[in-house]
Length: 282
Image (cartoon, rainbow, N blue to C red; front, side, top):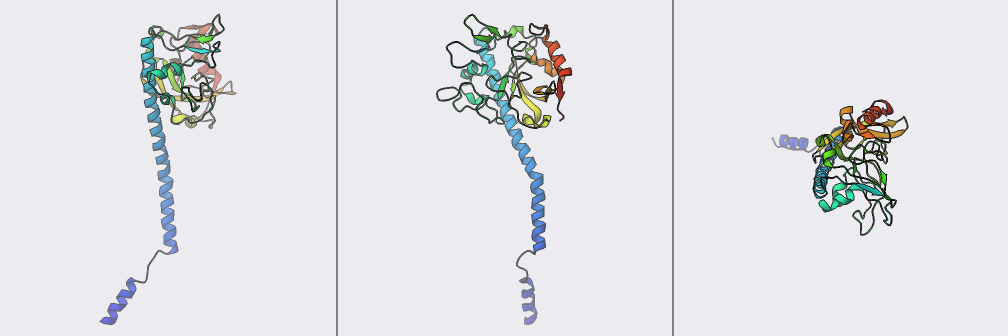
């Protein structure tokens, strides 16, 4: 009886670890789980950044509404080459005081620096980080059609684009005001400028937020909207909202004539969207 007991104890103490095969199986299972879960975690982080970006844009939209109330129902103008001034004046510069922080103009998915503009100690953007959102100067930024009129030169040499009155916007809820941008210095959402610092692959899904840009509208509301990238005339990177009806939201009034082109804003958008851009695949 004693011998049997000892033999049973010896059997229970023979194996004290895993075999090599068992360890390899465990490692393989862990690798498979990691391969499955890591993309999920990455997507969750990307979604969180997109949500934070959308929250920022909503505050930017509110700032623009408050500005318009203070300036006779008129949206911000932009200025460049101001005599005696060291910098141009962009829309975000006049809106920051309404929210007290430049941080709302930074998208978590845009961390590059050195875009130009007012940077350094004592400025509103001391770290020189690139702004995340571009203003709707129009599809062609100096021709008008968006929230600004065509660029004009004042007698003192100042070049400026005047902000439009809210009453001039035929459908404020369908006119874009700001959206995600890769533009530099003068932060716009112009068709040929919005991707000016973009360095990703030539597919729509490689654009910020999976090509779903956060967009603010002239009535102050914001939403996530599908955009498309491509090559204008097969050469220059460009982007517009996906679908012609959404692309027409560049226009404060689709029937506004653009002197530079001798056609309406709606006609220009339609022409560019249908014939001039070689669109990237999703």
